[in-house]
Image 1: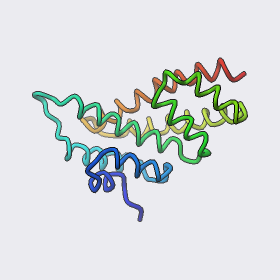
Image 2 (image 1 turned 90 degrees about the horizontal axis):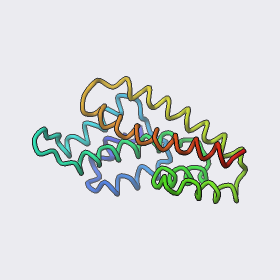
Image 3 (image 1 turned 180 degrees about the horizontal axis):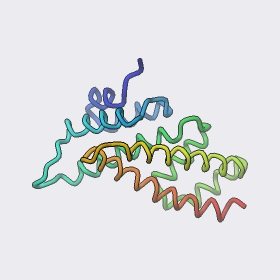
Length: 165
């Protein structure tokens, strides 16, 4: 059985190294509600929640961690060049118009539309799974990561609608 994201996180003390390992998985990992809970628990074991003198960097890291894993899962099955486009778009949303223009120079507009539809479907499915998590800090971190994905997804929808006709 492949190693879970929680197991990878627990054995990888540097978060940047965790991101590199997850990136290499190309979305081929399990991310159901139980996996989300396990990853969230691994995160909180390393960065315990403090109700007094909260460490906001650790909170932001939690959102980033969950956003990264959700996005990688949502990109499962897309071609490598499409994945790279979306990774860049979600990392630097201010560059979306330029990224779209660059993508269209090497790919068909239909590929952008089709991949965006697949991405939206995958994100909606992941949102539903996050909704199944019990109320608590783990769900909150996933919702924080998810909200960022949906905000950027909205920008993509606008720009793809304008530039791909």
